[in-house]
Image (cartoon, rainbow, N blue to C red; front, top):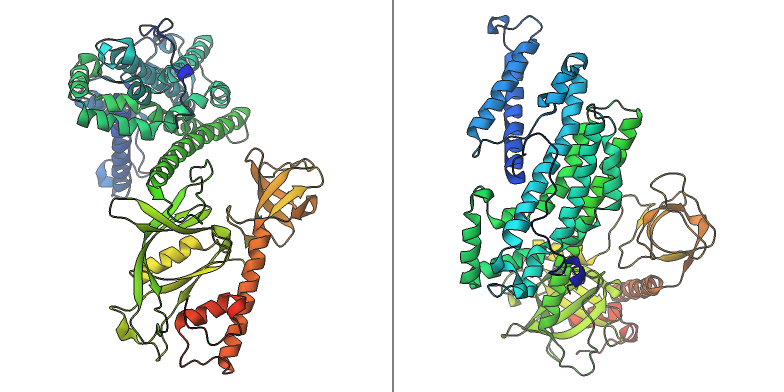
Length: 595
C-alpha cells in the first residue's frame, strides 16, 4: 500500500544532516510561511474594504473632498498604503512582514523607483513576492525538519528515546527531505536571477523549468496526506508520550505558537499558492508579449502540478476506501467467485441500504403481503456488488456484475390493481437488471428506496451519462467503445490527441461532424481526433450494448402482448411480468408464478 513512499525517500542515518539549511540571500529574514499566509489574507481583506469605501465615496457628492472626477491623489494613495502596512505590522501576532521590492537598498540606490512607472513597479512587486514567499516557505520547512523530525522522540528506531515507530515516522514526514531540496533549488535560482538584474523580467522561465522538471516530489507528498492525517490523529489520541513530546516542541519560541500540523501541511498549501502567484504576474503583463507567453506556460504548469497533487491524494483516499470494503467482504457461496476489489482504476461511487421485494411462491406480489429483505449495495466505478450486512460489521456478497451489464428503470405503482395498502408507505421502486451477473446469468432485483429523492440518486448514479445534444453521444469510462488507430495523426491544436498506428483509444464522445474525443490506454493522454483515423473494435461495450438491445426488444414485445390480452393481467404477479420483460425464455410463458 505504501507504494508511493518507499524506503529510498528517507536518507540513511549516515547521510542525514538535519542541521543543513540553505541560507537565503535576502537582506532580512522572512516570516514563517503560516504567518505570511495569514497576513496576506488580512491584506486581501483590507484591500477589499478599501475598494468598497472607494466605490462608496466615488458615488458621493463633491462635498466629500474629492474632485469632480472623484479622483484620489497619488500621495494620498501612498499614505493609505503605508498606514495599512503599519496597521498590519501592529496587529500581526509577531510583528513580522515579508520584504517588498521597493524597500531593497539596491533598488533605492539605483534610483529605479523614480525611473519606473507605477505599473512596472507593481509588476516587480508581483515578481518579488514569488521570491520572498519561497524564502518564507523554506524557513518553515526547515523548522519542520530540524525541530520536529530531528527530535530524538520522533526518530523511530534511530533513537532509543523515540516514542513512535518507523512506520509512523514515515507516515508523518513522508518525503519532506525531497520537498525541502526542491524548494532550495528553486529559491537559489530565483535569488541568483535577482542578483543578476534588479528588474525582474524573465522570472517565469525559471518557474516553468522547476514546475515541469522538479515538482514530482509534491505529488508524492500530497498523496500521503490521508495517511499523515490519520496517523497524527491516532498518535495524539492513543500515545500520551507522543502528545507530550509534540506539545513541548510546539511551545518552543521558534514555532511562534504554531502547531505541528501547520508545518506538516506546508507543501499542500504552497503548491496551491503557485498558480495564484503566477496569475498575479500574468495580470500585470501586456497580452502578446514574450513574457506573457512564458507566464501563461508557467500558469499552465503550476495548475497541472496542483491537479496531479489533488489526483494523487484522491487516488490514495480511494485506495483506502477499497481496502476498508475489501477487508469486510465475505463470500460464503461456493459458486460465487471472489473478485480482486483493490485496483488502481477502481473507486467507490455510492454505497447504501435498499429494500429488495421478493414474491412468495404462489402469492401475488401486488395483492398479497410482500416478503422483503434488506440489501446493502456497493457501487464502484466499474462494478456493482449486492451484499447482506451482518451484525459483526461484515458484508456477505450475494451477487455482482460489471456496470456495463446493468440496466435500471423506475417502476411506478399507479395502477388501480396495485394494493398500495400492502406497503407501509408509498413505495419508491426501481428495477435493477443484471444482464450478465457473477454466474453468467441474468438476474432481476426489484428494489425500494426510502424516498423519491433517494431513488433518483441511485438511478442517476447507476445510469451512464446522457448528452443534451441528441446528435452527440457521450460514454462513461466504464462502458465506452474502443478503437485502434489505423493512420497516424499529428495534432494541429493543443486539445487534440496525436495518434500512432496501433494506438488503443477509449472513445468517450462522438460528435455528429465525425470528431471523437478519447483517451489513450497507454499513457492516459486525452484529446480530440478525426474518426476516420481509427477503427472501432469489438469489446465489452459492444457486447453489453447487444444485451441491452435484446432487453429493450423483449420489453417492447411484452408490452404489446399485454395490450393484446395475451397475458392474464388479473393473475400475473409483478415479478413474473418484469421477468418476462427482460428474459426471453419467459417471454411466451404466462403460467410462471415463482422465482
